[in-house]
Image 1: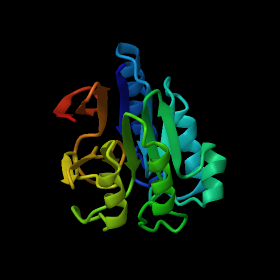
Image 2: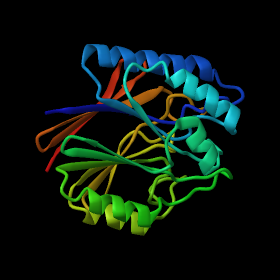
Image 3: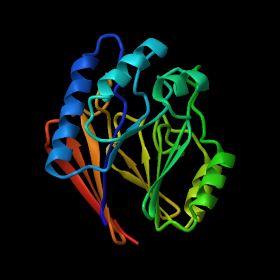
Length: 237
């Protein structure tokens, strides 16, 4: 069975000077059209969903609730919520593990109410990967880039080592770096960036990433919210 999902990040709902309501509506419409045309199993909104705390987060959730497909969220540095506030708004803890048959997704928190850049919780991640050791494929999502590849990345060697040594982690998906839309590799593991769908800087297009996983393969396309394909990458294991 195929697994088909989309990843988008950096909507910044509530950021002054941006047309965030329009941009959220455009993304929701694009993803609903995608699932109507070729069913999406889920969507991940990979951090910096809102801008500046609780009120913006609540409004962002109302906008994303228009999606016609299940969606999962990660916390970014602009979300600025405590752990309790995050769970109150989104109904889920900051770190999540979900299974889709023989495939799993791990979604990790990489910030806090102060907006600090944080490495993912290594103890939680190690236990999650241990629990999923028998799964065929695992896909990992977090907002803050775990290597100093980019201007806004941070160095998280322990996190990268856990991911590389797991054996069944096939790809990692980052947000945060609005000017990054390509792939970088660490210890043979691909890390994919998706640009942004609502930030005030970065690549000029508003983008998201479409991902199809089949038997031993992954194909991902970078798409604009208007449906234009900007790039396509495939890998196998």
